[in-house]
Image 1 (spheres, helix red, strand yellow):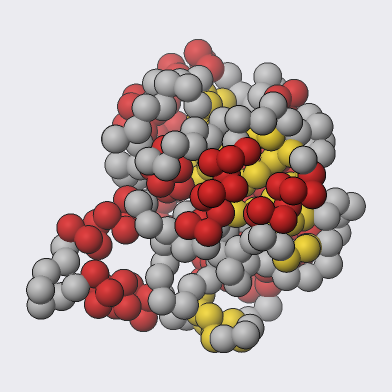
Image 2 (cartoon, rainbow, N blue to C red; image 1 turned 90 degrees about the horizontal axis):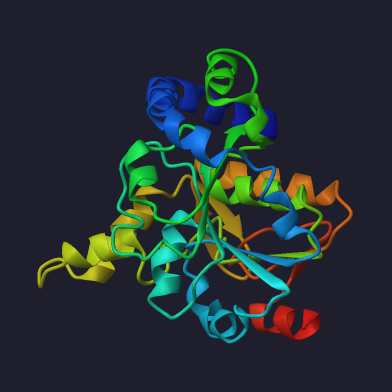
Length: 291
């Protein structure tokens, strides 16, 4: 499947499944959008910073010690995906920013103290997530044109700023970071594929699996079933990894974006991204190099 066909399939799926929900969310979010505005005042925070985008893939577990050691450094800014916030906080790491584009209710932040982090929120995000968030918020629209999107962005406000979607929240974080003149960019826990686990320990999805475990159906069996259901494509590396439509679209989108850029991206995801301008490394080695 070529990239154009894959991206078109993802966008058509979004339109069919979520357009009405996004439009309703934007109407409910308008008082918060008017209060907090868009990305304009956020952009200077990232300028010349070493930006680390943290996903919720299984390889995040390996990066936790380095994140815990260095996250307080002034020259570093951490942008966590919504599902990664809980495992970070539970290990003593407070991300500076969290990004979410979740359009339906999720309990990403129900057990979190969000008052000291900034939320980067898609304008069509679920209103309950916005109401539960206690810290500052910056809204943005998706960089998709045509109806029904154009009408949504006009209602949300064209001045919010736009982020390329790339099919998952990680790609939106990358889009925003690269538009802010960061000193360097690292990806942690953004595996975009899997072998025997889909998510890091301590995520909402991981906890859901543990809560359903029993003697007859242990956690390992639940994880195996989740992985098996998501095996849409194979990624041959030192071993065979698998991925689904969304992760594959994100992987190809990121690799194409990085190849056309002028910045080296440090990726510790497994299998993660590969190609031009991408250096596969551990988070510890990246930290030691830049600091």
